[in-house]
View 1 (cartoon, one colour):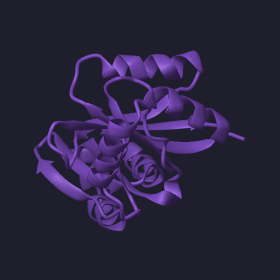
View 2: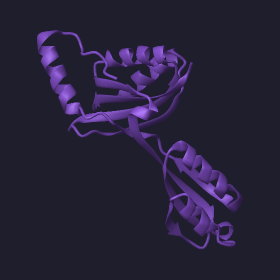
View 3: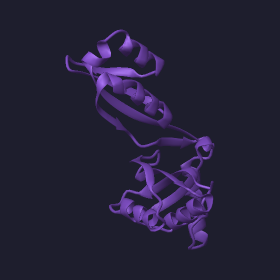
Amino acid sequence: MKQEYTISLFTEDHIGILSQITIILTRRQINIESITASESAVKGVQMLTLVVKTTPEMVQKVARQMQKLVDVLKVFVHTSDEIIYQEIALFKVTTKGLMSGNVIDNVVRAHHARILEVSPEYIVIEKTGHKSEITELLQKLEPCGVLQFVRSGRVAITKQVKELNAYLREMDEANRNTPEKIEIYN
């Protein structure tokens, strides 16, 4: 049965790695629900966070394939309950639509959102949370006149205590002893 997984890849900062990763997923007909790329806590190491919906067997198979890529240092696969994650969304809503009654006050406060900018034509609202919370706020704002809406990909950190630095040390030691890469840790 398909379920949602977050794949975190730690890679060297080289051109083309994203293309190689998407090819692996495309071959297996796995759609990327969201993707985020950023620096990691380790200098020179980039982190890619992918959200996919697939079977447990298939996510492990693609994770093993990704781990074999030259520029990939480490791949982690997590379910949503094993990580702490958030997304951010921006809503540009007509000022006229939000100013009628107490709509703006009620909507912003009830959804723990915040106002970033107010102009005579529009108001920009920011909401950080899970996809379902952002979707709920979008539905509340649509009758007010949403001019633009954008949502980021997932950013996530693990609940486990072991840090990437420890895995990199283990990999370095293992590489000195054997030419094979370390197994994927869940």
